[in-house]
Image (cartoon, rainbow, N blue to C red; front, side):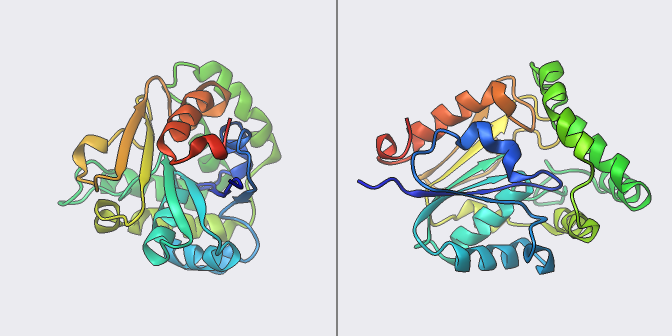
Length: 245
């Protein structure tokens, strides 16, 4: 059996290449997508990004979305389950903001402070977010060292794409889609995630979907938690011995 394709989608201000420890063992083709890539910055919603990516990658593939990228992967599965055979979300969320229907999201007042911070000091806000995504991890010191080269490169361009991403976080309501995803879905969450605390026990999901909490992991797996995430993906995928080792 020919190994399948993997589409990897990065998150807000985080290039897909930062997830390389997670997908390096994939035996088929790997397509990496960053939300700041040329072309995607013209999209006005995760659903529009998903539609554009489905045109690029129409063949049946596993889609792995990290953080905000999970919204894109789930939108793609809703739009065309023939092209999205399985979804893996990592540090993802059905809705980022808290609401009456989803009280486990970020409170409006907290998010508004984040918005103002980004509006006034985008570089500092982005650097703060990268620090937050390793905060609380049991390997925090080592992971902070690992993100240092990315911080040194500076803010991913264009700024407008990141500003759109902030708006998407505010409006990212996919509760219904996550409760009724038409394809098998594995939700990987960090037990110590300081950005998106584990929510799996709060969401009713289809029988073909699972939520797993990775003990000791923050919002970003890095080298330390990537092997455990990979094992969970390997065990979840049907015929996984054909696509990974």
